[in-house]
Image (cartoon, rainbow, N blue to C red; front, side):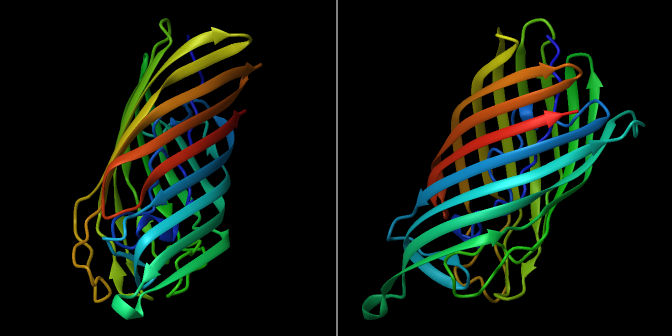
Length: 312
C-alpha cells in the first residue's frame, strides 16, 4: 500500500504570549511534524497546504509566567491560527534525497486574562490581538527513500514578522528568530498499511531585543503510529501522536527576572486521517487532539489540529 508523502512543518502559529513566553518554550508547536501528513515529499512538484490550530490553556495562580515583559499569574488563554503554505520539490535529487523548499503564512487570533502585580497592587487584566503571525521559511527539506523506510531532514526558520508590544498579554509575534534543525525516520508499510514516524529537533532562539530576554534552546521529539485501512476510494488512517518538549538550556539576559525558567511539557492524543488519490495527485486530510500533561513553567492545555494537503 503506497501512499504519497507530503509535509507540513507548521509555521508561526504562534501562540506567542500564550505559552508562558518568553520563559519556557519556543516557536515550535507540538504536533507540527509528527505523522504521515507531515513527511517531506518524495516526488517532484507542488504541495499546497492549509492548517487550522486551536489552543486552550491555563496556569495556576501560584506560578508567575514572563509574558511581554510582564510577570503574570492565574493565566487563561486561547489562540486560533489559520496558516496557508506550500512546498516545491525539485526534479533533481541532492545527495540522493528529494529536495524541497517552502514556507507558511499564519494569521492568529488570541485572548488572554491574568493577574499582574503582587499584594495590594495586584490587578486582573485581559487582552486580545489578531493579525499576521511570524512567518516560517523552510529553505531545506530533504527526504531519502529506502524501500518502506524514509529518512528526513528539515530546517524551519521562524522570522519575527508578527506584531509585538511590550506590556501586552497577547501578541501575534514573538519578536525573535528561531532556527529549528530537525531529523527523523519513518516507516510506510507498502503491504500492511502500518505507518510510524519519529522526529527530533533543537529550536535555537535569538534574543528579544525589546525585553532583553533570550529564551533557551528547546529539544522536541514526536512519535506517531497510524494504521491505514481501505475505505471508499481512499485510505482511512487511525492512530496516535505523542510528544516530549523540554527546554535544555536556561533563559538569559537582563529581562530574565525569573532566572533559567526552563519549561517542559508532554502529551499524547488520537489522530484520524483520510488519504484520497486523485489521478496522479493526492489529497490528505487529518485531525488530531493533543492534551498536555507533566507541564512545568508553561500553560497546560489542549491542541486541536486540522490539516489539509493537496500534492500535484
